[in-house]
Image (cartoon, rainbow, N blue to C red):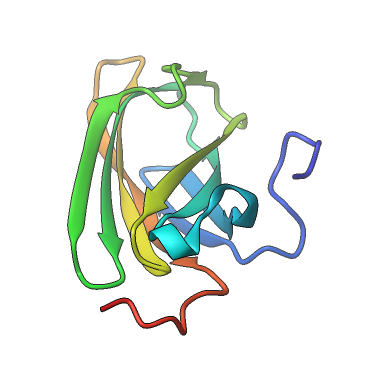
Length: 142
């Protein structure tokens, strides 16, 4: 893991922008936390949220749609991210790392953040869909 508080060089980045809020996502497989023989595959993802607008935005909640390699869908909703509801000033970024397990060796996830501007305007920011790939994708998952 990169010790700097930024995205990781050389890792594929998925990006989207909504109302001046830019979201960049990177994912990577956690081999040391996964147990393929037990059907347990774990990924970390690193997200950088940059406020390119001219007013502060507060991240209120998240909504994830996680799809496994056989089309099973799991939705996650909750307040904030990693225990925080950051207020992001114009030109600033908030970066965090989290993770997700799957029972298949591949999948993808995406979703949205609910944001509020200081004037009270609430809107959803797209989290771009990103792939969850492991070196075990050739395994028979039947």
